[in-house]
Length: 265
Ligand SMILES: NC(=O)c1ccc[n+]([C@@H]2O[C@H](COP(=O)([O-])OP(=O)(O)OC[C@H]3O[C@@H](n4cnc5c(N)ncnc54)[C@H](O)[C@@H]3O)[C@@H](O)[C@H]2O)c1
Ligand SMILES: OC[C@@H](O)C(O)[C@H](O)CO
Image (cartoon, rainbow, N blue to C red; front, side):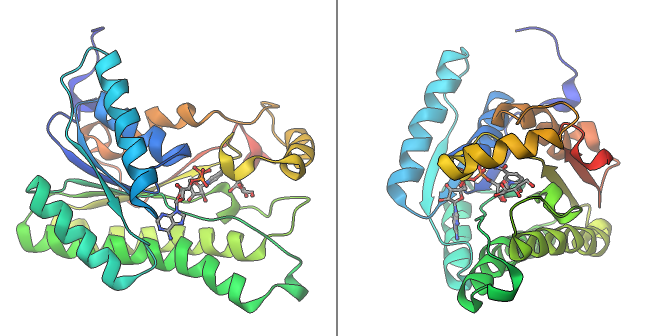
């Protein structure tokens, strides 16, 4: 193994990552387990979460590491009862949790004047309320058990800018609110040694951005990106490990934007 700074190690830590069946969430948990952590894949179906577990274990083996403990959990993060029972199961099976990444999220859009109420509500329920429910459960458990927890919220550059040309007011509002939620939790929980930060990506090549319509849109997006390309999911691994490891021990309440320069303009 090449030498690396010890403060980036996640040796023995237990990480819960929501929406880790695919895309960015899977990449983040992969980075954590390759840095020595064990982990919980939380997603909408047991089947997709279990497939991700197999993939992550194989990645660790291919890297020549000891097999990490990784388990799958079916949970809709927007369900209060679901979040509570999933957290209890994880704690029972792992004995503790050190890191929470609230990554589960949905996208979508429509012109604001026609935005269907149910779609707007769902966006807020998953992207904001689900984030709050998981963070609240973790924060309470860490405070009661005197554990120096770390929360990493996956927000988006859409919390700071309005994307174009697609119209997506609900998504943008949900991400702006989650960044402000992050700061509020960081201030409330700093006295308990719990750090809370956000990682806000620009456009990433994941399933959320696949399909003919997205292909067309991405040609437009690239014109606004100084680096003139869409990110690969693995380009967020370093920032994610930094934000939950001791390498960022004096960082809380920060939003790290990783967007190829999009928000420069
Ligand atoms: N792809 C991008 O360009 C981009 C850019 C900025 C931010 N993000 C954010 O990154 C995160 C991950 O995005 P992605 O591109 O990997 O998306 P993705 O659609 O590939 O993966 C999202 C995962 O979340 C899960 N999920 C959705 N709703 C859930 C719920 N209620 N409960 C549990 N799991 C749920 C899905 O099943 C899926 O596995 C999201 O929060 C997204 O908003 C993505
Ligand atoms: O801003 C980058 C993304 O959050 C994006 O808005 C989304 O993936 C578009 O559908």
